[in-house]
Image (cartoon, rainbow, N blue to C red; front, top):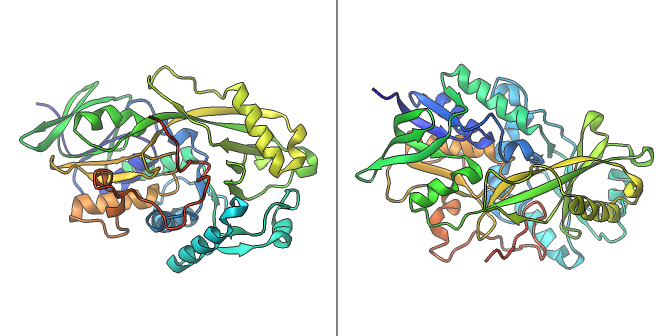
Length: 402
């Protein structure tokens, strides 16, 4: 007889780990998490792991705001391991033409309850004394934001999930979702079938083929994205806040031992046709472009030695926003996809809300309706009233991929 579970979670990244832990905390029965390789092997392990609230749309901002207490109070909210959260603060720069939009978005975020406010050049020079802010009339600042350790965060969720009785099956690839009479029956794995009354697909780019087989109509495009790391010289050695800079289409965060390096991500993507045959290292031309943009904002980094970099696989949607939904016609199937390189910071709230949905019939922590897959067929993409011209650099707002 094949093994049975009440819920199978597919994917051992931060979202899948959060879903599994929250399901167990809500006494959802026997829960099995299947991961094809190891924890945080996909997009999570390559994430910049920014923890910030600044979005141009309210639904994502609410997800991030509901997730922040997990990072701030990990021991109380999770109770195992550590997220490695560093409250370094976050600075948000926009192009000069988007200053009015920045102000409008700060007002929207403050209305939610987020601690954010505008700062001018003089205050910016106190926050980031080595940065060039001559081109900045005002920036948004979030003192409560920062960054975390994506691998430690995932292991923390998994450790607590295991304590609560979740079976974690590493090296177990889910190859298909089994259905019959418009209801899920379980999954086929590399180790054999597992019967289940519910399945949550949270495996990043690697679950896109399964979602297509299930008829999910959202356009999902696996993409390769990169980051480069530069060691700050003594003149700019002090740690700095997280930064999202759409004027120069990049994002920054401290990285490495004693946080003496800076990690740089720029808005460059490569479509992936083969999910198993791409390089996980950073490309030389990318590193040079990243350095060029970094030096515009931090001139003292002109002679900073490169210390490495990496590449990860993310999934883009047509509107650059996640899809979090249940299948419209196959009962028992839920999916979290289209992470767009920006779902680390919202994973705690996503896991909680999806677990509420499965066990209680509806999410209560946050409203997930704006993230429904049907929004694309409805001609109702998720967008804020004041989107920036260039878009968010760790997730450009408009990339034409065919």
